[in-house]
Amino acid sequence: SDTSSSSSNHKSIAVTATVVGLLTGIALATYGLRLRDRERLRQATSRIRKSLQPGQRYALGPSFLRPKKRETVLIIGAGAYGTAMAYTAAINHHEVILYMRDAAQCECINTKGYNPKYIGEDYPLAPERNKVRGICTPAELQVLLTQQQDLIVILALPCQLTPKWCASHKDWIRPDTLLVSTAKGLYMETKQLIGHAILDALDRAEQPLCFLSGPGFALDIVKGDPTTVVVASDRLVQAVRIQKLMSHSQRFRVYTSHDPVGVQLGGALKNPLAVGAGMIAGMGYGINTLSAVITRASSELCDLCVAMGGDPATIHGLSGIGDLMLTCFSPKSRNQQCGQRLMKGERINDILQEMTVEGVATAQVAMAYAEMCGLDLPLFGMVHSLLNETVKPSQAVELLMGRPLKLETTPH
Image (cartoon, rainbow, N blue to C red; front, side):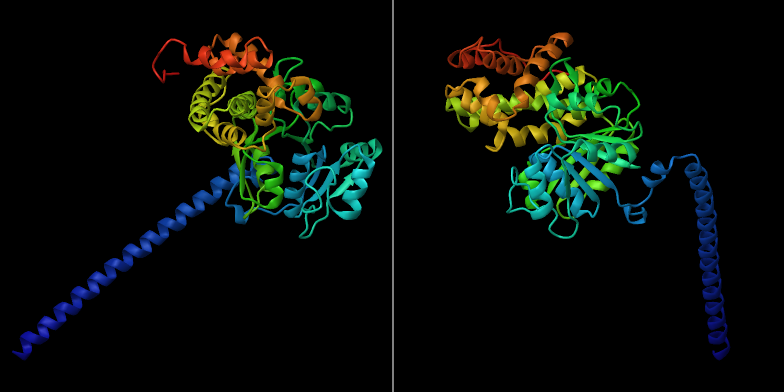
C-alpha cells in the first residue's frame, strides 16, 4: 500500500515536471521568436527611416514618442479667424507673429494683449503663457519671410484677396516655406480652386501648401469650445506638421487628409448653400424646409465634388457636411445672415460693403463648374438665380418643388 502510494506520487511529480518543462520551453521559444521579430522590425524600420526626409521621420510613430518642436508661425491677417489661429498656436507654446496693416490695432495687441477689432478684450491672446507679437510694417514682414528658417505662414485672408497678396509678396516668400490657407472659397477672377490660384500667383508649382477647413467659428475657438477641423495636403507629412502645431488636448483637434481637392471644394461650396439656408429663414419657412434643403444640398455638394476629382468621403466629413451644418444652422454665419437680409429687401452690394460673404462669389464659380461637368444642381442654381435677381423669391419654391419627380438617390 505504501509502495503503491509512493509510486503514484513519483508519477505525479514526473508528469508535473514534464508539463512545467514543456510550458517553460514554449515560453522561452515564444520569447526568442519575439526578440527575433522585434530585431527584424527594428532593422526594417531603420532602413525605411534612412530613406525618409526629416519631416517624414517626424510623422512616424506614436505621438508621445515624437519630438516636441517649437515652431515659428506667421499669420497673415488679423481678422477674427486669423486671431483665432494665433491664439491656438500660442497656447501650444509656439512663437506666433500676427501681421496686420492697422498700426493702432497692432499696438493694442502688443501692449494690451487683445485684438480690439475682432474678438475683443474679453478673450486675450494666449493668456496662459505665450504672448502673440503683432507687426504692421512691410519691413518687419520682409525680414520674417526672407530670413526665418522653417517658417510656417498661415494665410487668414478673404478668399478673393489671398492670391493677390501672394502675388505681391512672392519675391519674399521662400520656396521651402510651408503655407496654410484658411480661405473657404473659389477664386472668382480665374474660376479656380484657391490652391491653384495661390500657386499661379507665386509662379511656382512646388510650394509646400496645406488647406485648413472645417466647422469652427473664430469666437468659439478662442472661448475654448472643443473644435475639430481637418488639414489637407498632397504631401501628408506637411499636413501632419500642421496637425501637431495646432492640436490641443482639450480645445482644438486637427485631423489630416490627403484629399486637398475635396477639402477645398467642401469648404468653398457650402458657402452659397448657406446663403440659401438664410434665404429660407428670411422667407419665413421653418425647420422642415431647412432640413430638406440641407439634405438635398449635401447630395449636390457631393456630386460636384466627385465630378471635380474629390473623394466623396471627404464631403461626408468635417470640411463638407460638418461645415455645411455649422453655416446653415448657426445665426453667426455671415452667409446665412446675407441670405436672410436679401429676402427682407436689402441689396447685395450694400451687404457686401459691410462684411465679406464668400458664398456670393462662390455661387457664380460653382455654376460654372456644374455646367463644365454637365451636372444638374437645382439648389445651387436657385441660389445663383436669386443672388442675380433673375428669379423672384415668390417663384423660388414653386420652381424647386414643381420639378419632375424622381428617385431620391442615384449611383455615382
